[in-house]
Amino acid sequence: MAKKKKNKSKSQKKEMLYSDIKPERKKNLTKSGYEENLRNLQVELVKLQKWIRTKKLKVVVIFEGRDAAGKGGVIKRITQRLNPRVCRVVALTTPTEREKTQWYFQRYVDHLPAAGEIVLFDRSWYNRAGVEYVMDFCTEDEHKEFLRSCPEFERMLVRSGIKLIKYWFSISDEEQEARFQDRIKDRTKRWKLSDMDMASRAHWVEYSKAKDIMFAHTDIKQAPWYVVNADVKRRARLNCINHLLSLIPYEDIPSEPIGLPPRQKKVGYVRPPIEDQNFIPEVF
Image (cartoon, rainbow, N blue to C red):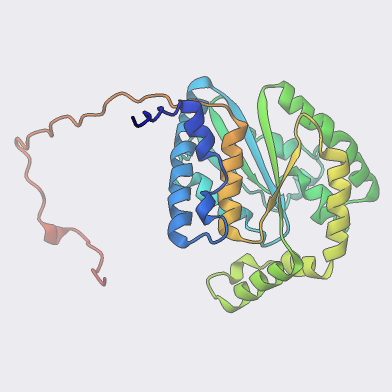
């Protein structure tokens, strides 16, 4: 007599989803395999979003790493299916003259989440430990003070109820150069190459040392650093989203059935002539 197959519990199903990538695709992740896994993960992100909003959680995710490491690509896939009123991206530009005179963390505090919100920092207060330190945009004393105060600042955020998650995207020298060359050749990507990006190539070792110092001081128990192997973009995206989902326990909150109401009848309404409206040319 054949044995009956046991139904998998919800926890087992979730555990299967969180296995990085389907085993048969680990050696060769095809485009279709990538898209299938990404779709599944994005469905889970939508469930997580509803859980965060319902439970009024506050989540901050920091994305740091080498230039061209793929941070923006991961952020784009995370936000792609989410409500921008719940999940928003913060990518601050160079501080103004006024902001330079403020407490260093002040301009970042203004962007922290309220209850039921997710904030993704595309680079963050860690600029001081990276580009500012390497390119001499801050003094030695300012850098030392950052290393002292940053862990306390983050512990304070965690104590206030914020879930703080920090990702470092690690990329090899060879892969970074290949992506820079691709940006130079592709006119639609040249805007991604800033002066600081170009300078980072000349200061590769200094950036490595700065990152090591930063980790030594800020890889704390309350907010540890998680390193993403970013040499293969598709794998990095899937692995990072998969890991992010695993860090926040959530449940699927069922939605009420949605039914469209009947459309209002056109009583006493006459649509204006199409000729009176400025339609754009239908080129395609």
